[in-house]
Image 1 (tube, helix red, strand yellow):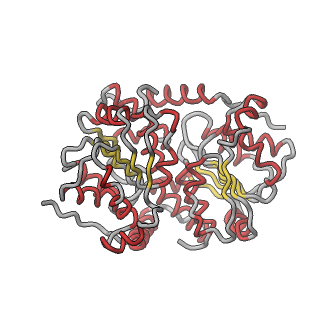
Image 2 (spheres, one colour; image 1 turned 45 degrees about the horizontal axis):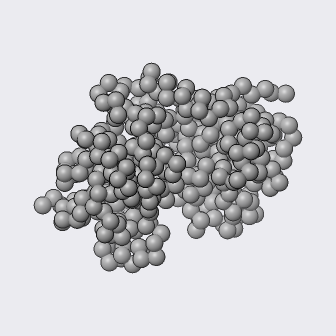
Image 3 (cartoon, chains in turn green, blue; image 1 turned 60 degrees about the vertical axis):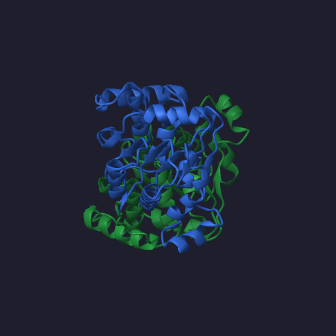
Length: 210
Length: 210
């Protein structure tokens, strides 16, 4: 009979995980608050090397925390991002919204000649001002958000720009970093990113500390 | 005014992504079917290097596909895994089940002295035989599943063992690879894994091809 020896207590696992990440990851260029967010993002992907690709614009963490405390809605490009948000950590019972499966989205996609992920953003416009935007899947969504901001759309409080993948992910995050239209942002440079890292960053913004 | 130049068609993005992955990733040690699954998993994490950590036991893909075609339920340890499954790809309207937030789970966790992720598995037992089990988050869930199998629990058709992280993830996947109690499995060795890679593997099993 095999005996399996493992830590069974969730909190103990978290604590040990965060200690390992802090010991192994290069976090020196982050502020204390930024490091907390980065540690959670690394925890979500299992790679301490991710630290070198994470970029926060000045004021991102403070702006994100303030928006959530003020009750800002969280707009997500993918259901998996929305599902990864821990409701119990949110400071103001913030709404977590994904409009990808809204019945209006396919028609909007045809209208704008873009993906459904991009079209879904059109349904955020009324409440975009001051919101927390989390893009963890689709480069087209991030590019389209930038086009809307360029054309004068209301500004979110912060943008988490973390689409993952091989076509457009790197480029869309680069474009956000080059011009975020005055909105504080966080990105993961290159191909990495995804729903788990994005949700982890949101959960970290939602409540200070680990 | 910045012009953003990017591919807006979802299918074109998929095709180009898969072509890049096939060109860059080391897929030579996989069968054709296994390579399809691996390509989707790499797509989900953005890292071609993941290929070297993916392991399929003999017969995994065939057993997983047959189970899904026969209508097997899919048991997931985390909501994010369940949410990542594309219902439209499933061959038999398979149920996708996550019992983590079942009201009985906290009490069961106290009873067995383990995490809620582990306790949630107790609620799978009646339908575990022949099912598709997907563990993409919690090492405790995978360890506990192995304990149940050791003690004579009904055998799933396949196990996707892909918890991510720094404490127990590597060890739980190693334990599965050492003795899966006769159940075909897929793992991602080491710290990598997670809900997106797990859901991608499920989606690939659900329908042959990319």
